[in-house]
Image (tube, rainbow, N blue to C red; front, side, top):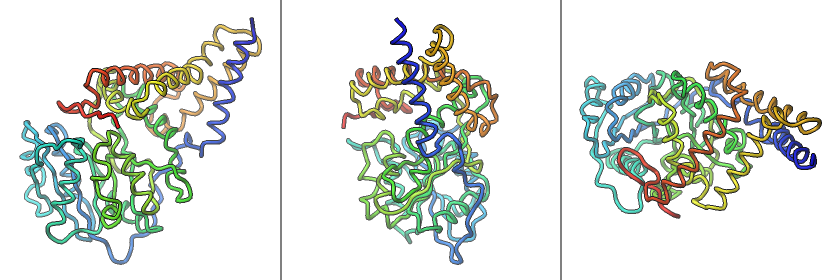
Length: 381
């Protein structure tokens, strides 16, 4: 009668020990851009490309923060208006206050086989090359507001070790109850899948990026086949990270310099955000989905269940595993200035993410996967 709980407790505890001790310290949140290398003597030219679809709520602040960049090298800004119906382009121009740095272009209708954001990015790259191509492309989202030294920090880090991609995980908005509960865990789970130390190690195959802020070497991107090489990717940032790491070293880290101002006020808003790409992360494979559900139950749900309802060794193992997961979330909770007590809620948070993943798969079977601003973009690979 006690063999099954004892075994379950032992497995859960072993998994948590392995993750905390053997996965590149992903949970410590040490990979940040707080300490910067020096800028090169000759500053490279940079073009910021901002794909934007119905971003009236955010585009003004995003563009204003780009115009305000303190960067002595040549720097241009291109907003790619992707079929907006809310005056996004006009608001972008107003925010630039006549700055000669800004240009706005209208994206062509979406072609088959492309996701909307990647199509806009590719058109921006092509448009920016019609005059004097810049050395680097800075892909940044329409909801991201940057500190005045963000670009200089990106260039400094790219110059160090000749990196072909430098990406910052923008600080997400964390104000509502749903955001405080779920956002730190979102970054925690991302780091679990893509440990930043491994991503930034040129000897490792692990690759990833954070789509809100990516500085890319233009020549290396062209050698890799351009954005067209990943044109159907729903998780476009990690696809670009993998593409670029085949061309040279990359770097990914946390930052306070770039922050998202997109609000996710309710649990449904964050659930929809997760569901947009969760099933794509599993390669649209039903067996992987089933394995993920079972795995999440063993790793996250079993420990508190055993701690509360089992006895003996099983209870002790469950309590130890639950304690480890709560401690693992603490550095990210500290980074987001959230109560450490949310660490104890990680089992429930993981259950929410599991539910959103199941919803993602259900939406895909209905032909509504990858929903974003009126488009359903998930395509079976």
